[in-house]
Image (cartoon, rainbow, N blue to C red):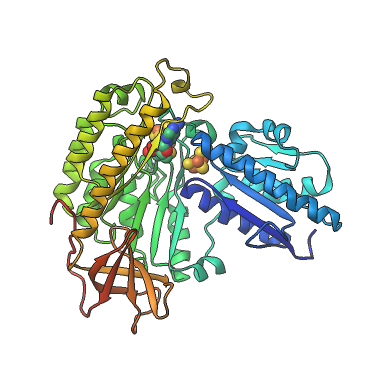
Length: 464
Ligand code: SAH
Ligand code: SF4
Ligand code: F3S
């Protein structure tokens, strides 16, 4: 398998951690002669990097395996072997069960094993029995998986993800992450800094720090003490070439003073915060084991806005959690009205095997959940539109990331993470451009490039 070129197709589901992991998998497979391809038709190895967060997400994987089995059989008729691998959180949660349910699968391996991928794949190539690896080994997989500034990163653009923390110790009663990703682990500051320096040298201008509970970060600093995320952001903002820093996903409990201050004081920390609240009812939040109340959440929002009034807030919501009443749901709507979100994600509660909430009485009927979800989404869509409308006529800096669909058009991101379309002119990808927003579309803004340098832009619907 070594010398000749083989093709690998990686399909990624779920969160940004999986996006990052897929890139690292591709990196460790490259020295074995694997080149990435963009479809399963001619792939010698197909990897499905899966998500287990909701039932629908997990079921998608089995339908995809069905489709891939057809390619596998067609290739077998031509005398070619195709290895089918399931990685990610479904692999971790279901393990052996996957090969029982889907015999076309040759390999199953969990998120803690990716650095050992060459050995795992080599075993599958040699043998004909399915290989299943879902251990949580003691060694730190990150030691073996640096965020290399490989060609793909450069060609793909000027933004990159870097995982700084993995796993979660919060055990919200609805969530599988503590089981699929294991206990919380923070990478040392020096390693992250080295990754970000390499990326900056390769042309990356914006880095998003990733973790399931990223603001619980407490990695070892150069002084031997645990550093917080706020302190890490400060350090990374001093690296030449890095213009923008983002991080996701945060837990309200871990929004400490240093992190809030970073938003107020450090212009490279972007005014965007994804801070999932899940529900506005204290009774439901308690049953979810969220460790915050609606009131403490609103206080945090107030403190962040005191230092950074234009911050764009985002959240995740679950409707129809077991026992949720109409009054609980009304409390969620009230919280949304009180905050004013720039954008958000909302889901119907999905019982996950092995989680405490799945065993709770009084599961909410599907019809009630569907109705609540529609009402919540309508309110959130109104708020998103209001936030975007408040940007019309304003000037802001955008980072130009890629060509747009129309000739001469470029697409960038605003500080608030909105996609912004501009007519390119002399501006080039990788540059910051000062623009004036002229209109809003369904999912993006349209703007004209203007001269001059950015002052503090502000387009929050609340501060407008
Ligand atoms: N670590 C992040 C979220 C991880 S999962 C955090 O703590 O906020 C992403 C989102 O999926 C969650 O915020 C939640 O809104 C949703 N989610 C998780 N488990 C779910 C379930 N069982 N049913 C419905 N939505 C769920
Ligand atoms: Fe899941 Fe809660 Fe951990 Fe987020 S904080 S990953 S929702 S257990
Ligand atoms: Fe899904 Fe696993 Fe991410 S369950 S959301 S892919 S950590």
